[in-house]
Image 1 (tube, rainbow, N blue to C red):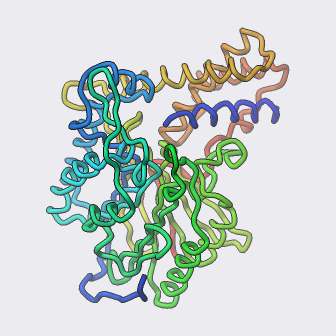
Image 2 (image 1 turned 180 degrees about the horizontal axis):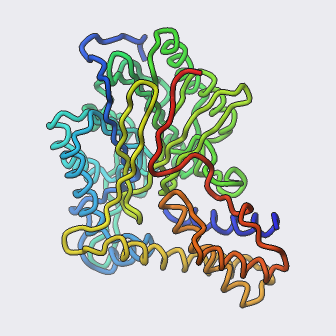
Image 3 (image 1 turned 90 degrees about the vertical axis):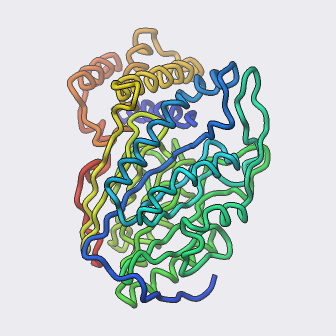
Amino acid sequence: MRNWCIFLLLLLYSISCDFYAASIILSDQVDPSPTKKIAVISDVHYLSPQLIEKGVALTYFENATGRNTKENHAVLQEVLLNLEHDAPHVLLITGDLTNHGERQSHLDFIKLLKPIQDAGTQIFVIPGNHDVHIPDAKAYKGESQYPVEGISSHDFIQLYRDHGYNNTLNRDNSSLSYLAELDAKLWLLAIDSNRHQEYNASSISAGRILPETLEWALQILREANEKGITVVGMMHHGLVEHMPFQESFFPNYIVEDWRKVASRLADAGLRIIFTGHFHANDITLFTSPAGNMIYDVETASMVQYPFAYRLMELEGDKISIDTRYVTSIPGNNNLEDTARKRLEMVTSRMAKNKLNASGLPIPEMMKNNLHELIVELYLVHVRGDEVLNENLQEMIKHFAEMMGVEAESESFAFDFPPEDNKVILSIGKE
């Protein structure tokens, strides 16, 4: 049973992979709030309308990625309007702000954030692997795609100076990481986990935390612990595994040497970090060998079903997490259904390609069943709180029978605890 479960996971991960300082100075100007309202969005992949026009190039791009640019713009606008109404104290954006690092996309995205910021929400960003030093940023117009201007690390700091980089308590000298004060008793540790200085022909999906950056972060956590200050973290890549065997089958979506890195951060006192990159809604609890816990709260993408974002309340050592979904937009009241079907089509195409390319002697009937199972499992995972509904259970049972083994539902525990979409977590010192 274990062997075919691993085989299934390998294919599932392969398909997903194809989707595309100074010393700390405390400020006495920010009073602690009894309740801190925090929102999180991730993987916006914003592509400026100035860089697209209807035509072969845009159609090819949208078909290849499973995206609808016009709908994506409307979804983002809906989320930003909702957040303006919800008025969180803080908005965290955990990387991949732009489609592929286009300067114009950065400029236009910043303009979209202005109404929320003007209304009083503090906005903090961290880059993703699609934001900085991208050598092949493109526009899609008419019959062709063509290169456009990207941005450097220095540009990123200047462009987002009002979204974290001008409000730092401390800056890392080795990366785009920084420390910001949310109030007198709450700090934000924003970690740059990208490898943008290594980019050559294109970006690199894999992530890592530089040794110098990790030591910088650990020193901050030690000082926070001494001062009785709570620290929340954010970065683009996952800190820990979100599915079984992810380290083996899908390493590009978690930071390099994740067990050691997660253990050191947890042992230093970090209890929660907000991440993205995988385009899925998932929360995982990791416990270090020393017994210290840390939650990795991964948020889904703004350009793909299920169009999820987080709205949370932090009070004392408890954080209440609620997931919101955009299910309709002007002109499409059935956005959730159409976007799910579009993702299903893209996933189905990739699953078939992977199965055909595997070279394994799989009978046609078994291949068809496995293909259907992979697609359903992926669609369930991206929404969070994976539940083996009756249809999935029947598919698993049928596939297991063809494999000549007994179906055991516990073998399909793809979702690590705790709950993914609505949960209250304790992040106090142990």
